[in-house]
Length: 318
Image (tube, rainbow, N blue to C red):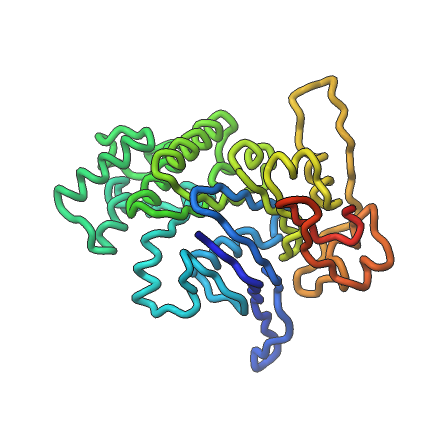
């Protein structure tokens, strides 16, 4: 359904009297991946590694510096604004903050029904009936349609955001840290809801998160990003059971395990994450890597298949 080819996004930094471009923030730097129809692809990594930017580029919410995104074989960079508007009906997003993403001056019914009005699909009583059905689908009482976002809890507000994303019957939904702002018990409810909706409507998800335990539960495949680069990608069980990249291994070692007798291998990374303005030469992880060699400081590794369906960008991942 989605094909991403060598995607880059550089944000210019301006300075001086004439506001000339003096540098670039390399938020996404040469990322390639695909998402199959009906699949849930988890995208993980530290804060600032470019996960959200990848999601927004896939939706066409910002133009890439270079590279291409194809949705069902159609390039988002080669279509007109009117054609992109039609495509966007099939691509929706669930935002991280369930309160900031909702207009406080609109009732919940107006928020959920707004996409139907914008795209000219429904209005009047037909729209109200559709809104009521969507609220029931996500576990909200339709009688609350006249209430405002501040009258709901965080979990309920996120359900409103999910209902809004479902309004246009999309094929692809980008879940951008969709449960990170919720309590653990509410996280479980929302994750179960997303899984039920995925099966019911045959949805495709790009599930962006920094919570590896949540990603393991919901995803079919997992991609790992570091400083704008994709460093590893594999089926979920393969990645969690046989992680190849040192960064992935370090991330997995930090996941809490609910067993007081279990002592996992603890990998502590030294140093700070390099600046995306001036990333280090060679492998971007070599400044913090516990397996770093001379070749890592000089040659940038390519994403290569180390096992069936398992890709890794590392000189020493074998």
